[in-house]
Image (cartoon, rainbow, N blue to C red; front, side):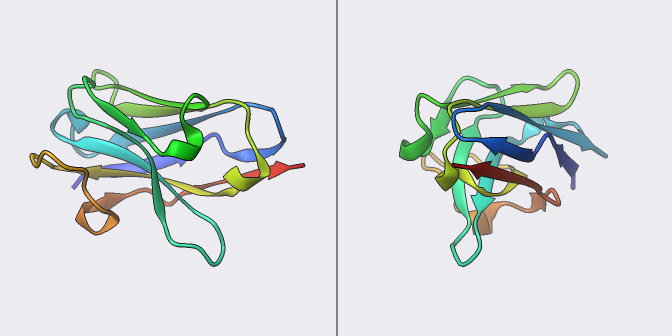
Length: 125
């Protein structure tokens, strides 16, 4: 399995931006689709953004469309989440995850085998 480590979280005000990084080690991410999940206290983990292993297709949760963008660089083994116009509802712990996936539909959280430890994002109003 690939090991994943997230960074870039923090405490910001509404309207600010953050950049989250997820660095992989132990294996190349080139064979994996990658997802950014978030989980707020008392809520289920949800997929925020997703990118195919070759970077050709991405997905964003409706509530973050136009504000968040996922990208990756297989050459340096990282995936990146740009978050703009942050809102208090974006407050959560954000996780990077990897999956080997060939189905035509999105994988669920249970399909991802490799997870990072998460990075906290807190947005104050």
